[in-house]
Image (tube, rainbow, N blue to C red; front, side, top):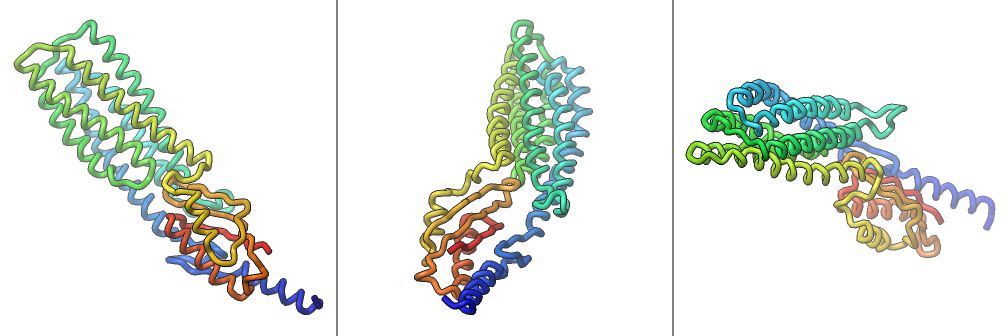
Length: 319
């Protein structure tokens, strides 16, 4: 091969690998992002968490006062539990706001993972608080005291309203931060519903042991579900493959593109459970592929990636 032809071939290869693709809001070198969508998600999450925070602060006053007046272990336990709720929501809200910051030279992928850190931190705090609630309730099984059933009915209704309002705001959230808090809120709503039923029963039959039993059952439910959130958040921080992406199927679809021989140094991970990233070297069969067609190959690869929920790619062609 002459020097001129070799130079021309190398120039074409370089041009192909520098080809710019367009998708949604931004143009990147072999990548596609929509930063605005991600920022909107975290902004909405921050607003949802702030709403839940206000409701929790108001309910703190109700539950502490009500627990003392009614002599209910479940309500008194929930007073401590609710204070930990408020602390957790404050941390979640602060980290969620921080996660919406733009990327810079220090955090080139942005700050989205602060949201995951918030979910991990809150899951840990709430699990520990729930263990404490379960322990306190267990000890009360053997020294059960009759609570004020009438007062419990009123506080339980308020608990359902306040916690239910927070749950409605958070349960459709897309961030792990919101999911961690919403699981907690769901547990609280379930507990207040159980307490309402128990309170009505206690109005007619004196069975004080029902009160701590409800706390133990709800604590077990919360611990179980938050443990799953903890594990999922930890996997993201450890850069495991996204749980909702079938990696083998993705590889098969990428390899089905004409002209591709193999995938090398294939890496896929999630930044925050929302944005997924894929990088790979693509070995091209240079005998069967016209170098001028590499741009269309990149288009096919990106379209396949979009189908799998991947919104950031970096492909390097090798020959």
